[in-house]
Image 1 (tube, rainbow, N blue to C red):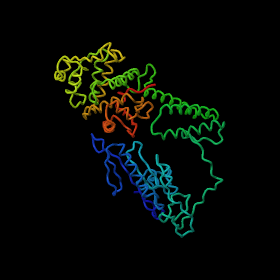
Image 2 (cartoon, rainbow, N blue to C red):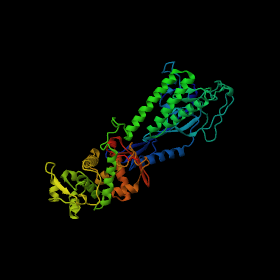
Image 3 (spheres, helix red, strand yellow):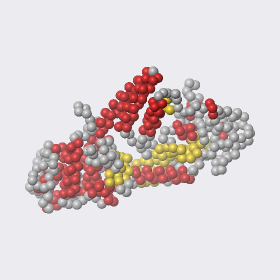
Image 4 (tube, rainbow, N blue to C red):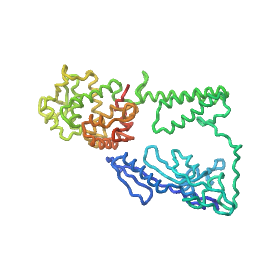
Length: 512
């Protein structure tokens, strides 16, 4: 803990309070999470999913804020107690050329959280430290101190401890014998200047339209940095506007460095647009895509969705297991109605009783095989079993429209999804694999669910996976635990999430 010099105002104050609420996984293979608080009196909570854990963690922190709504005015910064880099400058460990950090303003109750939602923290600190901490939000402010004659204690505001904090030389000192600094007269205070790209925009810059454009660009860049998710298209537009504005600024001020900055912004805009094209799949001819998708052509993405829709409408048996098996058999026999199958192709789908399911499909006439189901399940790659689906033979209705060269590509894509390493290792059931297939065909190029990343209706997913509505959320939690989904946020009607970078090559993005 950093100690101040003897006799300083810091010795008369108490360390600022700090408490942290954390969200941690319970263990491998489980979607459960653990919510813990640094306060000893708070008991640990266990929640079934990360989304429920985040909700409980935020509610727990809000309960603390309601219980202690006002920061103590006689406290000094909690970050000073931890020895942060800014306050270490006051201890003499840095060289004289480095500027010492000076706290300032009233004591505030600041709330900080990380970007991925794994911890939330509340602490008492000065307003200047809160403003310098990235992402900090002020929940409450202590009562301001009042002036007093030398040697007389400062009266405490109602509800606040005695002795107001004196963090800055702009406030009245509480220590006897320390002179009160004179405030800067209002006529000497300069109006704050606009900034863009760490450059100060002069007040007398002409034309006025150029100065307004630079001020607006600075505001837009700062707003973009606060976005939860990046948007490369917006960032490229901002870089192009910056290049034009800096080029004009260089001409009117004869500053060569501004022209160089404009050139760098123009180059950055070109690079960002190329990255955006790679992520969206709109890659110029001759360039390799940023995401090497297993199905690289947009028309193949439409075929994949058409097969899922066809199977949902023509599966002869209810349930997700029958639908997944019919989907894989359809992709094996599409275009001609015939194909080859081995036992591993069926046993690797996570079916509860594959033999009974095949017996039912052959019994109702949807599937035809030359021998018995037991022979099919025992067949090896060197001796596959020929199968026939009469409804997919040429001339039968309805029929799928893609050709014979597309069929093996679609079949290989579906086999790659359902036999994903983590799905296979955790022995995911057929319903989970069918949901993974469905979600892979309903994303943006960046992997967000829905046409514009706004999410997918839960009723459409339950219809596609052939499940009752109440059984869908456990499958979503399972895919999140298996590193298939991230940023999952289900509501009563929609599912908002993003497919992880690991499975982006398996996606079939929605295109206009």
